[in-house]
Length: 470
Image (cartoon, rainbow, N blue to C red; front, side):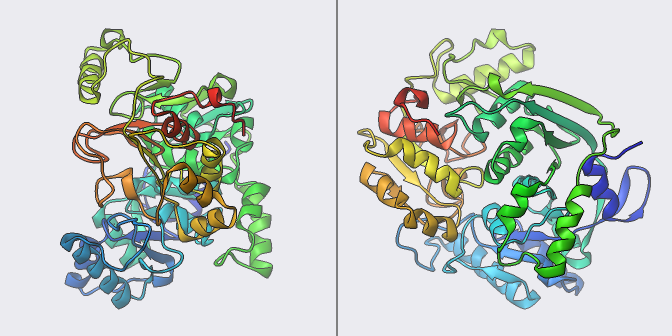
C-alpha cells in the first residue's frame, strides 16, 4: 500500500519506534521566540545540558515588541524588556543565531524563517507556536510543540512523537477573481469546523491549491491549525523551487540539485489511503467575514449574523449566543455595513508582500474613513523594504494608514498594539478569540483586501463593490 506525503516525511525522520503510533522523530529545524522559549532554556541550564545543534535553531523577537514607525531597541515595558533580555542571553550562551529587534531582517518568525531559506521541502519543523503549520506550504511538515518539548528538541534534536491520522482536503477549480487564499481557508474552516481536523495531519491538494502562489499556500497552511490540524503538508512543486532560489540559507550546487531531484518523491503515492477525505470547489468561495469568537464562526460577507437556534446542537447554540453577545451583535443583522473602529493588516497569516499589494490596490486613491484607525504592519524587514521600493508605503500613508515596523502587533494582546474594550476591528489575523486583540476587543477576521475595503468605507464591505480585481 502506498504512503501519503505526511507518512513519507514521518518515515524519513523516524529514529526509533516505540509502537505503531509512537516514535522518536528527528527534527530538522526549530524556530524560537521570546515568549515560548524561556522555560525551555531554564530547564537546559538546570540539567546541565547544551543545545545539540545550535545551527538548526533560529531565534526571533516578534511577540512583545512595539511596532512604532520609528524603531528603538527598548520594548517600552519592564516585563517585555525582561523577556527579551533573557532571550538574548539564552541565544548568546547556547550559540543560537538571533534576529534581534534592530536587525534589518527582524519580523514575524513564520515570515522570516521561509524568506531566509531556513525551511526547505522534506524537512520536519517543530516550534513553540501553533502556526508552525505555515511551513507545510514549502513541502515541509511543521507543527507546534509545548515548552517541555522545546527543551527536549534543543537538547536532542528529536521528539517523542505521536503519529497523526491523515486527512486530504482537495479543492478543485480556481479561487474566483478578487478573492484570496484567506477567503478559501476561512471557507474551509467554516465548513469543517474548528475541530474538523483534530488528531489529523492535513494534506491540501487539487487544482485550486496548486494554483495559489507560494505565499497564498502559506496563508492556507497557517490557518489550517484553526481546523485543529496537528500538521500540514502541500506537495512542493516548481513554484516552491522558484520561490526558494537564491535565498540566503538555501543549498547551492549539488545540494540544490539533490533537493530538486527529490521533489518527485515528496508526493502522496497514487494508492495511498487517507483516514478522511473532503472535497470542495473553489468556485463556491465568497469573501468571508467572521461574526463570532472562533474562526469557524464565519460566513460570506453577503450573509447575516445567524440565529443561535439554527445551530445543530445545544452546545453550539449556547456558543453562538455567547459569541453574539460578546461581539455586540444581533441575530439577523447583515454583516455588510457593520461599522468598525480599527483596521489591521498584518500577522503571520497575511503580512507578506503579496498581501500588502492586494490591500494597496484597494486603498489607492481612497482615504481611511473618518473615525477609523488603520494600521499596516509588514511581516519582516525584507517585506517592508520591498513594499517601500514598490511605493506601497506611500499609497498607505497617503490614504491615512499607519505604516509601522514589523512584529506580531495586533494579532495578539502581548504588545502595545491592542484594541480598547468594545472596539470593533477588521483584521487580517488568524484568531478572533475573546480578548485576543485586547480585553473586550471585537475582531472580525477577513482578507487583507477586505480589511482595506472596511478601512476606506468605515464598515464591513464586500471588496468587489469597489471595483478592484486582482
